[in-house]
Length: 260
Image (cartoon, rainbow, N blue to C red):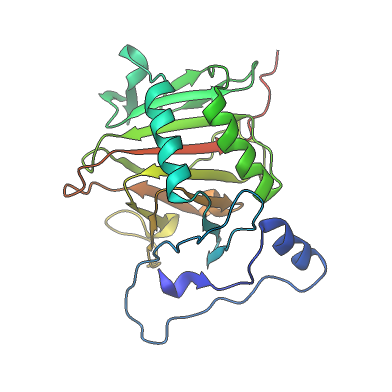
């Protein structure tokens, strides 16, 4: 949404963080003078290759700090998507169910986890040990690390077969996550709406009204969810029945090693 968009200089996140560390500070929040509701749409990355610095969109609100770019051009994103479709092995049976308010339900999407040995991750009532990295996931992980300066040892893969597959409002705040670490969300396939809702504005009788932040996550895009976003904001991928194409989302995380 345009009112939450801070238009910063081109370059990578490392450059932005260096500017902030030097005392310049982040850019101020740019407000929409028209007061209308608009969606934040993806920008085309042009002919940028491996070594080019992506053009970042900085999304800011109260307690929300995200950075968005289209990291992969269409041809490369198409190739990665096809590899993911061939190579990712998704959960089946009991692992394809989720616990919500004490009851178990079939997950309205496919899921898989990959990562370093010795890790476990618990979410929605499931404790999972990741499968070893496969080459396509390593390539995407390494590209994200190259442009952000962050390292990741785990990825959750979600596959949405069409617009009926979805994920409800939640926060990625599991105790296994390294404190203060960002989450990198990389999307391939169908462009989908993605919502952030402040924790104080949820439910039928919220304690206060905070405007929902609405984004669109494009094919080949990267969304960095920085601290403290997951402390204050829930996010979701809502049902969109008109969308017929699949989408695969990779959320790279830094997980603390399992204590023995």
